[in-house]
Every structure is written in structure tokens, then in C-alpha cells.
Amino acid sequence: MRAEITVRPAVPEDAEFLVRGNAEMALETEHLSLDLSRLRSGVHAVFDDPSRGRYFIAERGGSRAGQFMITYEWSDWRNGLFWWIQSVWVAPEHRGAGVFRALYSHVRSLAKADPGVCGLRLYVENSNQRAQHTYLRCGMRRSGYSLFEEDFVLTRND
Image 1 (tube, helix red, strand yellow):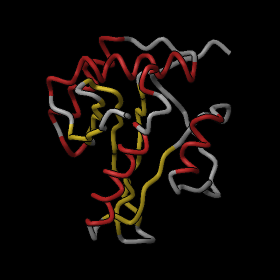
Image 2: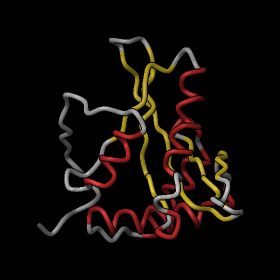
Image 3: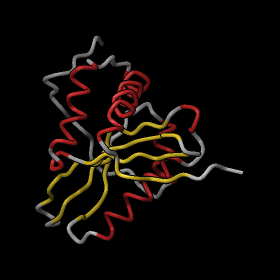
Image 4: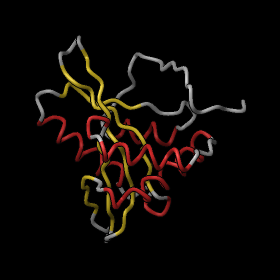
């Protein structure tokens, strides 16, 4: 029998779980070792100012199993907000059990119930095929956009 998965808003007491998940996700998917002090401050900044975003926690069998954050992007074309899904991480021992699907389904329901939300978006590393297949299975589709950036904080050695 599969353990039940529940989703709830994260609370400040979840901060270290979120820090660990974000750090492990960055290392696993982008081979980046994040500055934990900066990351910890960034996680707490979301709790200190909800206009920055919201974290959600999935619990499976009574343990924290996964996380993600939503942030907001105004679309003048749609006169509404896109909710961006970020900082997605599922603990390795809970992968393949529907944790991301539960998080996504929960947040999708919240977004669809809010008339000010026009859609959900996320970005994913080009080489992360497993995640891309998961997102497609949840009903998302590829957009016609490529992401460009100029990052003033994180640096890479490639």
C-alpha cells in the first residue's frame, strides 16, 4: 500500500528542509554548490515577505518528502499573474511515488480557483529529461520560449 501524500503551505520551521532541498537540487541538476548562508537568507526572505513567493511541502507517510515554491509574474497580455514553480525537489527515497504530482495538483487547484491567476509556468534544465517527462505527464506542455539570463550572483566554471 502506498503511503498517503499530503500537501501544505510551508512554515518557517520547514526552512532547513527547504535549504537542504534547494542545495541538493542545485548540485544534482546544475552541478552548483550554493552558498548555504545566502540560500538560508533567501528562504527566510520568502517567509518574511509573502509577495516574494510561497513554499509548499509534500509529506509522505508523515515525513517531508518534497517541496516547491511559487513566485509571481504579471502578464499584461492576460491581465493576470502567472505562478512560476521553482525550487522543485523531491527527496530521493520518495521519487516515483507521486510527490511532485501531488504538489502540482494542489497548487494547480489553488491557481485555477483564483481568477487573478492566468497560468502556471516553470523552467527546467535542458538535460533534465526525467523532470521534463514528469511535467508533461502532469499536463504541462512545452512553451515556445527559451530562457535567457544574466546572473549577477551565481557563477559557473564551464
